[in-house]
Length: 483
Image 1 (tube, helix red, strand yellow):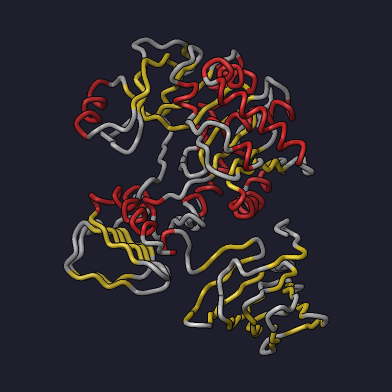
Image 2 (cartoon, rainbow, N blue to C red; image 1 turned 135 degrees about the horizontal axis):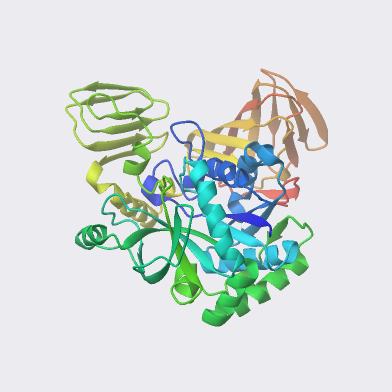
């Protein structure tokens, strides 16, 4: 029976602000080793035995980010086929998994197995993870709905818990599975401490393994409203799809699918559910404290990613991109410096960073959602400065990439090539520009920028006009389907 890893990639990761933003969430954040969480997930998934393909469920806004990460990692491991299911809005895990089960059932048959993984988990012990999945696969072959519990090593208030039965249901070569007594939401510290002392509770990892037909049957019985609405939306979306590897879900019908987690919809109700206590290392990298553990501490317990000058500083994490951070007489802090925002938090309050993000959203502050550097399918742009009636950007276009053929109603643009070569459509003209050459694009002119070279094209763009919003754009042609 084919095994299909299904990667759930979404969410804002607000507890890792200011590095994680809504437009560039936690799975795509570069870790201290230079990799991203989603690239590590793709590598881990593609290295498993018997994998037939990889499916990614993500918001349509993250499609190109996910595709780039997948192309540079997992596809190079086994040259696996890849498919995407694109959500127009967030509806929690039950609708996402229902859509994946329907698509995989049609693509690979009803007995194909879905290994549901989050894009923002960290597991370094691939060997033990592989063995655990192999054991779980045998249970899934029998129609079981398998979830993976993590052996807790501390009381943790940021995770849900699973209480297991006293005796194992099935054992084999050092692995065990248990029936589940109950799922428990994130507890208080005292309750979490009590759970640790009983040895009857596991952390709920949010990873699952089941056959496509088994999870669909369970949804039909225990969450029929999800099942019926998901089938309706899947069929309507499939009719509109012209790419067998990309299923873009329609907004109107997808919003009719109930917003509910797979735990609440099925796993807490079905008799076929079992949990496997898993001994592999696992972290959801949910806050700055957990990410800091990936950085080797110095003799004073400080964890530094970037350049820092310290005097009498202890047990402090500092992450900086481009600037030197100087600290004097500090203890037990987290300091994260980015281009447009600075976070300073006591190490015991990092879970509350999400409250800062909520406040920024209420105030309409763009720092809650976007970086000064914004990813696009063709590369990136960075806002270098702006004021009344002007904005200056640094634009980087990847080799062979092209922006859309477009125009703006309210702004003109002046392009200056800093590095590389550019092919430019400017009104009725086709122009080739090299370093230190430029062109002026009046408002209303159709224009396009293409990098024909083998290295990045770097440009400076100066915008001027009465309105400089990113929504002042009319696309006529676009190789990324955004027209």
